[in-house]
Length: 503
Ligand code: NAD
Image 1: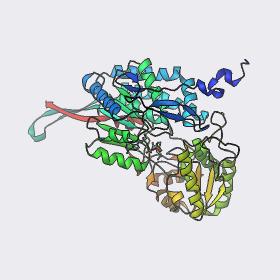
Image 2: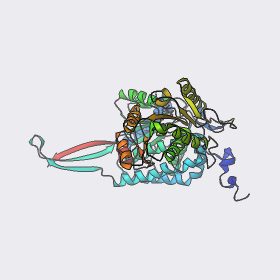
Image 3: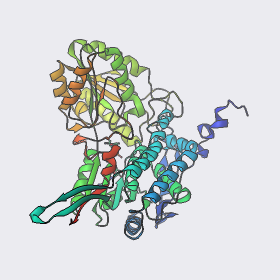
Image 4: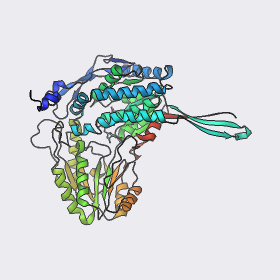
């Protein structure tokens, strides 16, 4: 076989059987099937082929997983042995790196993500973040001395100690599974918590493969991480009501996040929510209009628009509207939906048939709301299999239209005119969400001034990228509560204890 044949270096590219998944749950250190013996299928969204099966856990399995996490927290030294935790995280990072090629192929097959993105947010960056959080835990100031004071006349020496919260129930969506899972698991474990992970049913192998690495290639003790896949969303709901769980760390839709918060209220759990978005890409007059429009087009096509922080409302100066629309459409037309295993693909399929129906429903709604489609709007020709949708540009609707205000989670961009900086800020903020955004102007101070006025958790100015393990990420308003990544993301998983003794 020729050394230049892609199949020689990447058998998964031509032979789907080479894709390695994992069928088993991880409970109390054991890789095992569901108690009932039931399984469900995981599907390749680019081919609609069944990749394989995974254990379909029920409430009995979840009960065992929570019990095991509780025991590991209460009865082992995990929460107090920093060196053990740091060593475990570094072993996990090394295991990911050792199996990076097979995990990359499996991730592309299961999520439909373009393989190019696995070299950043879909795999390599989250794996690197494990090292970052291990370093942080080693250098973190776990105790702070507050010195002496004499409240009520009693001279006392006071200090503040940070401690793990306890058992964390982590619930994740399907779109960027390694990123979201490791952004929860890394800091939660580094802080000394134990975890029950309930991944989305659409991408279960991305979680169970992690379970295999933990069980087979790390010394992370039994029960510290438990992974429970299920086709039944009620398993996630059960995790939010169980009294043995101290904290729920949830990423998913705003609708589900509201249910999580309500059900966690019964036992007053600490709740951390990363939810949806409808972020604005604001171009001010005198910006490099064509350059900015190209970035906006590229962003919405990335992973078929399935990113909570992707900018999906393009706000452009009214007098430059036509020029902006044609520049954006031209770039979107050059980024067609296609095979995610091809290195040049940016827009793969959406995750499943239901999601494609949902996106197509919004595209129909755009015309019902009086809008028109400049480019895209259908399924790409020549791709009979796979849940593909053409990158779609919509004009003629205002900021209050449903397609402009609701999260679509597909490669769909709406262009809306604005009448200057104040109007752009008003439109950007006229949203129930506040997750991300982008501002472009030739004058840097003007762009930063507008960015400061937009109520959102992350924002780029003139193409600057905030995405990094040391940068907190999260939402204002209905985009969430709390922050993932950075020191703030680590501290989400800590309690604060104040102690005093007679001085
Ligand atoms: P989803 O809300 O449908 O499901 C997310 C997870 O919650 C899944 O594991 C699901 O099984 C579980 N779940 C469902 N009902 C539940 C309940 N009642 N109680 C507890 N758990 C329950 O989200 P999805 O469709 O898988 O993912 C897409 C959504 O995720 C989008 O809205 C997107 O914006 C959001 N998201 C947000 C971020 C962020 O960091 N802000 C990142 C990625 C995705």
